[in-house]
Image (cartoon, rainbow, N blue to C red; front, side, top):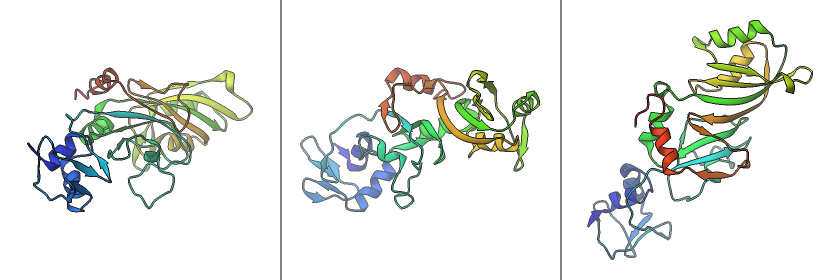
Length: 243
């Protein structure tokens, strides 16, 4: 015997508070009747959410890696766009929470989890997670700009910088340069802002790594893969997270 909201949370639908809201909204049926807060679920009871049977299970942390395409919006609002990143994910009954963000014009590695505490802990700047991006930018690049990007540039009252930068000289064509850059933070449009401050225009931005998790070349844009238990453990133990 267990309370309905805990039963739903243990099945991975979302947090207990979120599941309570689902019950209050009348979207959950218990043995064919609209469920109420505080309802008890027993072994042979049938629980339906959006006409799908919810099986009893012990909640496990799940993490999905999405290769986000350009144009997909990272948002929980159903009214903001008809092309939401979360719409590419499996199990639509699960309340997937994005770990950090990518802007609409960026592509690449984006993580989602069913554990809100895990998402917040990993995305927090103090967690020590570095992010790696492949960038194509137009403009004139030189040693001075390289040094400024690494030492820090004051932008909008914050000092932004790359922790590492590599210039792909072999890919340079005209004024277009390719870079691999790393950041220790995940501020809004941080990569673009740094390049813009150096009079460089970013025309392609793709995240290829988040901490210990790399984006495979074999995973097509718009496709996803579920991280293994070992990969999830590597996230929890990375940097200063110790989750």
